[in-house]
Length: 191
Image (cartoon, rainbow, N blue to C red):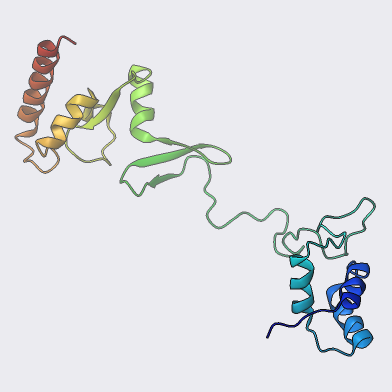
């Protein structure tokens, strides 16, 4: 229902617009013997673009409520000296979800893949753009004789030839064919 406000009502509302909305509605209803809800008067204030002087920001010198600060864990949850249940000591070996073995080399959480560590101890740093090939297809066999560095292009071709699913007797042949294909492609493309 469209209710008209008299000139006196609008003048009173404009003069008292800085009141908190519940007090605003209560005093208005008493003064003019009306039954307006705080929502109706709030909408009127917005339509008339009357500012209340409050913008939602804290003023300088504001004292926050005692419980209005970020909470941390309670004081008894974490006692000093206790180690988390997932903590592992240096030298611990685990298997990653991808199936590789890794070893903890330092605190707090420094891990190295064992096959990378073995290769770098024997042959030095891994060149850029090279990946490891486990000759027997077993990622848990990190012996240096089972490791070989191949290019990413050769790795792509090995995956195309289903190297991991092939018979163990055919793997050296597939590897030679892949290296030959990769070399031929590089020569043909002028790389």
